[in-house]
Image (cartoon, rainbow, N blue to C red):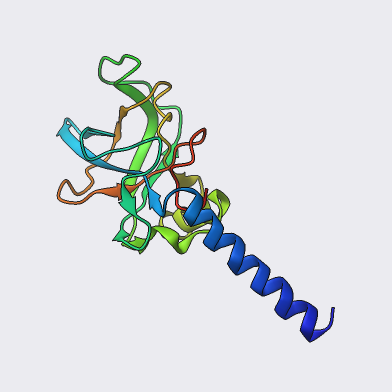
Length: 158
């Protein structure tokens, strides 16, 4: 591939990233921590500040990514569809812009780089339901954090 073709390909990739952020309205979905008990955090999309369908936070904001490592841990607390169990451990990354990632795969790789093998970006439905779930951890309750919703255009790369 010659230099001109490489430049054209790079420009096209940048345009695709820009269109991706615009498609989601330039916003991504963020969650927050609602509580902690006995080594278990309750995290979720709590209204009115959360919009799992269109995103709620501008993609240029610097927030941590909620990373999850599912190891099949049994639920130590009662669960239901809206308050599920994610079967593992959560951790918050360092703060990054939501538009730092062009794909879900890049966000997952970021979590692995931050915390090790098995970690990936947490999703809205990791608790086998939606809106909130629990996992082992003790993440910062003073900040919102990036998550993704697999079936909605509410991530900064959609």
